[in-house]
Image 1 (cartoon, rainbow, N blue to C red):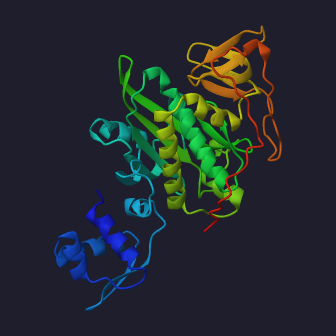
Image 2: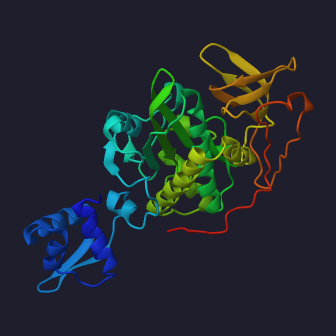
Image 3: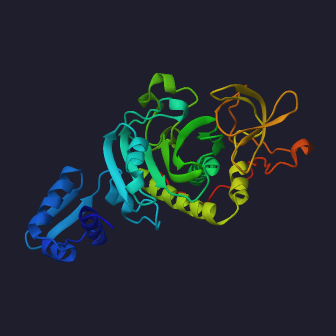
Length: 364
């Protein structure tokens, strides 16, 4: 259910530059004209340019370049994702907020933060979220076993990569929770699960995307092997439009996740994998595993062939490539199946020949 504020904005947008009377808005929304005036005043304070004239009413001239719920809701093509939006101009962690309300919130609720001051990545590492980025968390309530939750992280990476590739960006997925462009990190994903025994109660997926910011806006210690959409395109994008496209892509993939074998989604994930075929090491809380990434299992685990030839499945850990790993935009790394591991649950190899989505949203 859209808030009154959102409904007012939508009515003004639908008028397409024409005046809308306060009397009409009041009757349509079931509130007094005095309340309409108060809402209009607050909208103006928040950056909406709304003109008014006696006997004619209100006219929307321009909207702020912020990710307000009413902007995200306008034209959103999902049926579940993003239908309930909680917005903060500044907050510590969108994931922490989402987890605190998840039990009583409907599935698909998102928490959007313009500037995150206490963001973190996997294993508690810090994550910078300056203004101009796209930072949000989504609450999911899938009917899955705890061991299948890691699949959602990979699925989310696929969604982000798909939308970025539609903007002409060479986005690829780094196991387990990053998206890269030409070898540099542009998106981090943090999945947190609340479960009882082996049953998932809810999942919170946090996504941080370096969008309309420059590397110089980020802490110096976080600039290495990092990039932004603006630096790659040479211009800013419409963040609200990007988020709406991402929410739609996520909902479509979530429907697939709930209705088809995961192998169908996994084949798409591996087609955009930046990790398979690379020499690397994975650091877990207990040990370090080194070898060559040769595939991803149906559980979402990384398959690593160690020096002694043994294949080991790693479900989670910090992944670091062992040598220079920047890739040229046109470089192709199609893998060749290994007969030693052909009997695994699932073994796929990346194919850079995957064509980009033809629609091009352009820059602001």
